[in-house]
Image (tube, rainbow, N blue to C red; front, side, top):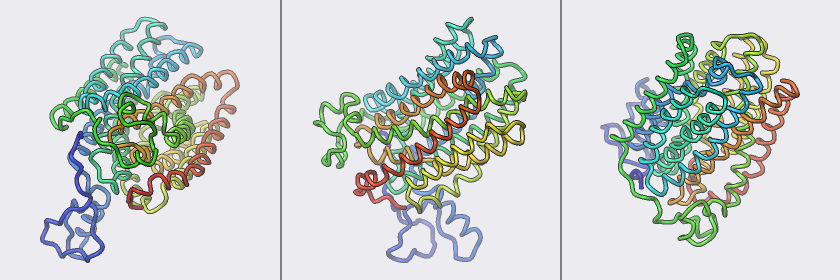
Length: 454
């Protein structure tokens, strides 16, 4: 395995009063202070939010923060393509190619991480991303920009299944959803910085964004190379759920590719629900910039939107993450899907900078509620030796959504008008919420064997 799976409980090492018997702390990363002291409350809160997670998790957490601080090319891609002289009719070709590449990256990355190891998969993705972005920057025309965008889409998604598998391998079962939530938090810590810097640096030239993106990708590669443990191919033991027909088929053929996932109907249905939700959220990345531009607002307004989104997540998620664990995660996801759909659809009436900020707060609140749920569900469904491929399929479903958003949404926006797009977005979001609630009973039956704390 990539990383040692630490026990959910560990004995306290600080000379603090012992916890009452029968109520062990599953994540005592911080010692208890005497009752009544503010420092004790702070340490207890820190233990709930950040405790019980092993070294490999913090390696990918740190690498993700480094990488995301410089993720500036894709968020400002619409503006970059406009600076290259592409018309509104040409930009969808490049964005569609980017989405098509995003379909290949997770599938290849999931297979690579299970076949050769998590660490090599992460390194490959973090090296390939700046290389393909360099091709995008140097491309002279529409055809080469489109081809380069497809490569960028594949390369930038290559590492994600390996990262998800590292978290699933190393985090104790009862801390898995919290771990994925904190991983999402790491993404937004970087995004908050990237949005602020990108909106400012864009006036100095797009080459600065490409350079910083490359440096931070290589930074994640360095962190993974030096700190992430070496791991072997993950093709040995089967998770006990296989005996229940979770994956179907015999053990040996399933380990060769994606048959283990394709025979898992519940996983495929869950991936379809993820497509609906991600179709809505993808509009925040590409359709909202078009709306901002058409309202006559500068690119810096989108930078402000990115910063507000990231700040809402960064400030709220560590606290809501622990609080929401008390509730059924699929019901939480249903509520979150509605919040995201309503917030994004209200873009149609935003008009000014203040309106975009307010709508961003709404869909960001939904993002906070949903953080870590999809990835933790997939980790619970996956056999132990196919975790990266399951994460790959989840990321592939998100790639499908991005492809639909990149290819169809701009076309719908141009042909039928903004109002049609935003009403369609609202419909997709409500369908995703309904689908999550319909799958809830089956997911509860399937994961009942895992003692996940709620």
